[in-house]
Image (cartoon, rainbow, N blue to C red):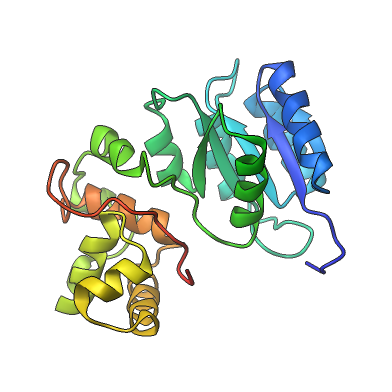
Amino acid sequence: MSAAAALRVVVADDQALVRSGFRMILAADGIDVVAEAAGGDEACAAVRRTRPDVVLMDIRMPGLDGLEATRRIMADPSPALDGRPCRIIILTTFDLDHYVYEALNAGASGFLLKDVTPEQLVAAVRLVSAGDALLAPTITRRLVERFARPAPAERAPGGDLSVLTPREMEVLRLLARGMSNAELAAALTLSVETVKTHVTRILTKLHLRDRVQAVVLAYETALVTPGAPGGAGAIEAPGG
């Protein structure tokens, strides 16, 4: 995407007031809301028609809900206009919809609380459009510990953990606890660049899109279990 091109966003929410409010906030910062949708079917159609950079997706909508809409959008190989994959941010309430974890597993790049400030909304859209994973550090661990459940090995979203080296397993375990690259480097007495290399190798070996999927996999394979001690910092993107 060229520096002059505005980000293109689709806002999917069944409340017209929420949609119009987000549109005004984003437009004030030069972000173009190319379509609005009141339901999942409308959201899927809007994405096919406009090919946005980012979708703000509510979970609870009439008809097709945001979870199934996320699955369908992520299964569509059509990229955004700049050739990159479309990114989805899940909109949720503070009590954390139980669908959010499933949505992350389905391919969403993160989530936002509906009481987000205008500055946080704009920052989130720009962050995710750049390829980062958005998991708010104050509630990331609460989310995965509340909803993640170990799944049978054949249902794991990535590859076999046995392909990882002992060091990579250690990095993945700490990454799943919410540590940033800087925190990982300090904990393991490594340089940040070395940590980035380890994270990239983990994602490549396990055929994962980003750190969000790595967190999901770590919990679903019981590499990390809810309630175990660990850090609770922000989860960054692979290059973060």
